[in-house]
Image (cartoon, rainbow, N blue to C red; front, side, top):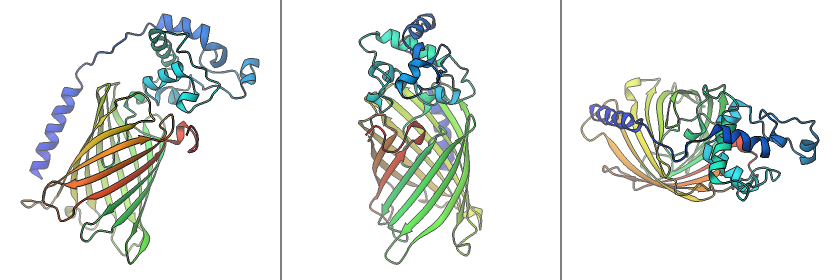
Length: 357
């Protein structure tokens, strides 16, 4: 346990370094952005960002444009995604085809200015910024509160473990900074196929800026068969930051406390580094996770290290449906060869599952 604590302190020191100021490439001109908005966007989205459903222009579109004055909608996606929609149109990002592209009419500076102005239409300071809506790693916990359905499948040849474990996660945004969590755990081996645990919890964003986010969560895992155990209490801190436009780093520290005997639990420290080489979501993005896990009843050699190389594959044009494939490899003499992971993610706040393929 002391070794894990020291490594956690090192991670915190790295976090402090990462919070140092980060300079942007273009300082937005809100006055210019307002002028572009008035001449290009207001006819559909309304002068204040709230579209008028009774407007002849809006009725002619056949769909009500997005309400830019809604603080949750305005805050939940990164500015870069908004700029992509302005430049290339809704269809390019799997959104409404009625949103036209403006890459020929507007310069990159004008796109940045009008996007910044749209972001200023409503006060979103009480909401975590979309810049910190980072990719979901395989094992490292994500800090940003989401509206997602996630399936995680794991195959392992580890002795004493079920070969196939499936988890269905339903995550629902609650209020300005919270997220409800429901997880269903199913195992499958040669002798049985059954639902074993139901996990419920809550995640809360504690601190954020456009460069970082820190969240905390508490989850209770209840066994379906109450005779198996009294369940397990889990708590974790999750952190995310953008190191540069191309590199994002996430980390989490999770503590597990079996209700039967808390001292039989374990601490898990995980970190993930993603390479975001393109602004287009429908690409393949590589990542590497490193995980360290140690039981509270520590003995020499109990600390287990693993590496988990993986790829995120954007399946839809907007990336709201994505696939993660990963292979976890032991680094400290474990008795298993590898664990294979498949994760399928659907961010239902961005549209239906079959939208934008």
